[in-house]
Each structure stands twice: as C-alpha cells, then as structure tokens.
Length: 275
Image (tube, rainbow, N blue to C red; front, side, top):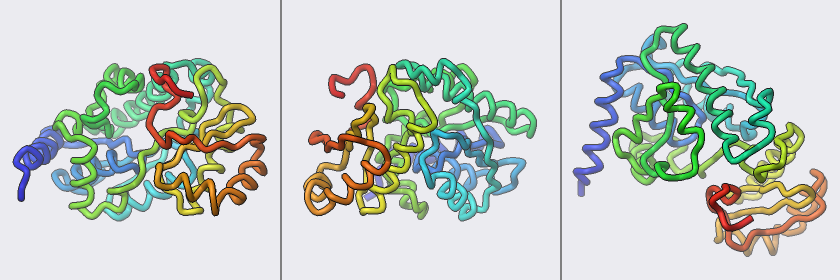
C-alpha cells in the first residue's frame, strides 16, 4: 500500500532539485549521496553542465570506496570527477578534537565550492538526511557556512526512506552498511596519522573479506576494538577468531578484542559514555 507521506517526500526531493537547475553532488558512494545523485539525474538528466558527481580522495577514505563511487556514477551515466582534499595538512584536523569533522568538511566544501563556481553549477548538495539531525555532526556546521544544500533533509527523508527509495531505483548500495571516514575510528585526542588510517583501513577490509558486514575497528594504541553487528559476534569469536587475531597482529595490533555491545555509530563521540 502506498505511503502518502513517503510519496510526498520523494516529490519534494525531486522538486527541490529541479528548482536549482544544476547540481554538484558531494558523492561518497554511500546510499545517501547515491540517492541524491540518482534523483538529480531523474529530474535534470546527465548533461555534466547540469549534474556532476565529485568524490574526494584522501588518506581518510576507506579502501575500495572510490571504486564503488566510480561504478555507481558510471551506471547512472553521470560524469564523475575525483578531487584531492588536504585535511591532513590542517593541524586542527590532525589534533583530533571533538570538532575534527568540522575541519574535514570545511576543507571538502571549500574545494567543492571552488569547483562549483568554476563550472557554473547552481549548488553543492550533500547526503545529509533527516535522521542525521541532532546527531553529533560538526561537519554540518561547515556545510551550512558554505551554503551546501541537503536535499534529503529538506524533503524530510529518514534513513529508512533513503534505503527504500534507493532500492526502488535499483541502486546497488541500497543496503550498504553506513560508513564514515577512517579518522572516526581514532579516539579524540589521539593524533590522526596516515599510518593509523592505513592500518585501520586494512583491518576493516580484511574483516569484510570474511563475510562480516556492518563493522568498525576502533584504534586504541596497541589495542584494536572490533565492533560488529551482534549477529556476527559469535562467529567472529569462534570459527573466525584465529584468522582475525593473526591478521590484526600482523598489522601491528598487540591486543584484539570484540566489543560485546556490537556496532553503533558515534561510539567515540564526546557524548558517548562508552569507549
């Protein structure tokens, strides 16, 4: 049965994008930005003068995500550009305070705004959705300051709505686990270093090869704290234990532990009462 409120949200999303006339989509390859891109194509077409997907490449991008973004853009027939961002050159970012994401997004949206102006596109759009409101997201402030548009949030689309619409449109990432930059695996106050990002990225990539889905490897010096979907914890502690321990030790971790609470977003945020 049709959900009128859901249908209205989709109409609002498409109407807002049509009103702008052209858009540069900050495209991570995740389900949120993929839906923004697909909706843009639906109402504006694939002419690069009207729709452009841009992915930022840096040390904090999880392994394999750039290739996913390329494949999705290709499947939608959209021009895709990759830009390099230099958040690692910002001391405010490297020192990894609770406001780290602000400086990351400030760097990203400064680069994208420059490109938008150069190409004559109307707006920069991100994948911020209505479920993100109220979460600890300093990056949202950086977006507002640079007049980045959040069409999913403006249309009232929640995360479940986003996945539903992405599935309806046949986007391969409709059920893709939530992602965040690799720096989110490092506790605030521990400096962000390229070698740590590479180690965490390699650890998570290995765990994915074992068939584990939604996960995080939280870096605590010599200790790797693995957050998994609760349904995967027993398997990881049993048949996969030796493989996980061996690979993460090879990557440089002395201690490897499974977080029995399981995966949850923002477990290293300052508002969290957990590790």
